[in-house]
Image (cartoon, rainbow, N blue to C red; front, side):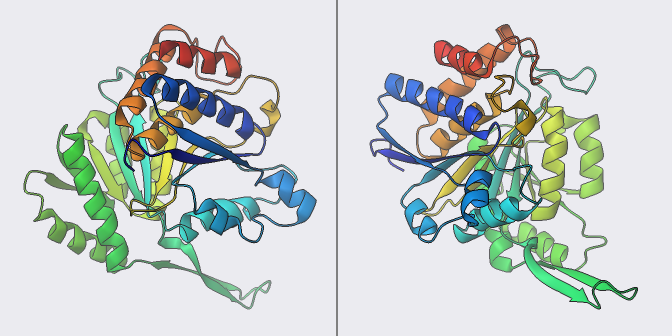
Length: 356
């Protein structure tokens, strides 16, 4: 997006503490936009558990046509204690990812100053890498079924789908990100080629072929189990990781704990194509038990706002937000845990605005 265009953002607060953290992301967006001269429009949508319980629909007719007008969606969180698990996740999160072809799931893994990591002797210089997860294929496509369901002979299948197109566009995007990041210039493919000998062989061959176009980037490989081991033992080794949907889902949660927990971790579901709609969110859940208490940590939602800005052509503003976050975590907050921050949810947002 050209930096002089109006930045149109759809805000889906969602459930539980989602609206509270989304509000702090919006607060910081407004503050940095004023400082950087960014024009923006914000539109709220009430999609989530409450709407589903009231109306029986997760996304109303015309929702996709409406959201398609926005290059960016800022999501608080979805998940309601009165809605069965999987209903909102599949009907809203996965539906948006697939319908808008958000084929990149981007997870920066950065330990901020003052944030505790469970890894002894590791600091912000050691934990600073990015995971690029393919976001529209693998087991998440929902292919499969049951045979003789609810009998002793029941069989269930869950089919993982990988396409050359799906692998290549994700891998190529990851190579370009590694080149732009310009740090270790190492891209590590994480897969399981020794066991998953069809789908992951396609990933491996595609990775090797695309790597020929990027002689300045070291093309590296880890089996997923080895990656988990090295991520804990030597996180400083990694620069950018590219991986499948399923493995990406798992290793990014491990990475989230390394960077201080889900209150800090943010992610983007990105359609990089011109006119695409992308969605940015904190990685933590809706945490309904903290609703209205002011105890929930908004840092992840504010980090998601920085990602939103960066992916929409406002890199200077995004860096300003990240630097402000690091000032607040490094000099103000006592902890990143809910209720132990030393400040309320809104006060943390205020502190980040002040630090801009």
